[in-house]
Length: 189
Length: 255
Image 1 (cartoon, each protein chain N blue to C red):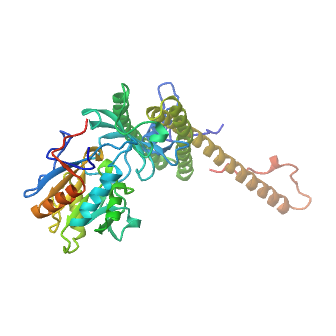
Image 2 (cartoon, rainbow over the protein chains, first blue to last red):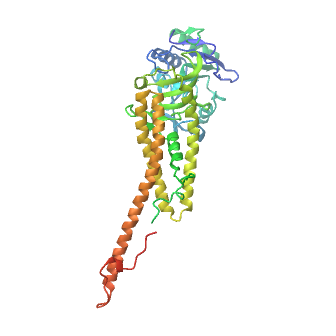
Image 3 (tube, each protein chain N blue to C red):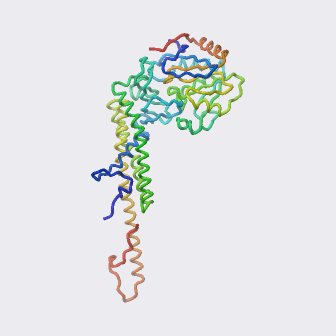
């Protein structure tokens, strides 16, 4: 199996996809790690980080002490396990993007991560828009400037790539294909 | 004879035989809410709730052996298993494969379902019992004729429960790991915490009460000694002089 495989359907039949009008969902699958650990293998992380950084401004949740931007978590998110201060990292650096899969307090394998994609020239979005995304599962609203969303699937075994902008989708999939992505995959058995 | 511990006022639950059972809800409550350390695992602890943010839909796991951030964890999950292609009970792990010998998506085995559901029910029941314990002890402080004394006793009980849960729970987790890493770790830790929490609650109350009694006794003797000295110093010359403390009017027992 390639580092990343594109699939139309999620491997988990019970998966609830993003259902916002005008958004299209794809699913990115990868092989299980040989060492028995959860999460995507290193090759997959590298491929995804390179592709995301190559086509979009990437914003993801991070440990507050390591993040340049912080927002205070409302009580509703605190009840969902969020720390008092939520860190946000916005970057195009693949090395930094790769860290989104291993953020303390925002564990990819427990679906505790969210990755917003913006056009390179998009202005920073408001805190309230970020918090609104986190309020529902799947998200019921997204920031106005956001054109793509990557979120972990069941147990972090796959990712749902939702895109509103066809150009972003095409360029992202092209970047992933350049990294060796296979199309039309199914869940690994 | 003084009552060592005013059990009924202390929020303890007395059964039909007059035995104290109030420590049981506190012990169970502790087991459901406290991080029970697993020795030799660099900060892992048994818990019934996840660490870190998760989406509103929540997690489908009910039992966690995890570090403070949830970054390293072993959790008992129910749902789609990408390894088997079925919906089943399985273990998910990250960064702890060496400690427990369980890979990600390892099937939980025949006892997995019982452990999964048991952990879920125990979490809810434990929280409820914790509320019962807090309410009963708060009530005991409010209605006590010596509320600060009672507050100290109650605080001692809860501190004992917490310490007992941690210490005995850790021992139970270590023992459970020897029997069956993962499931045994969790069961041993939770049972140890329950027993240690209940015992610690009882012991904490008894020790605190004894400490208070001792303090009161010391104060009473000091007061008596001071009263005796004042009596001797103020007695008229040639008048009756006390030759022992028993002739001194009692200063009364500190209340």
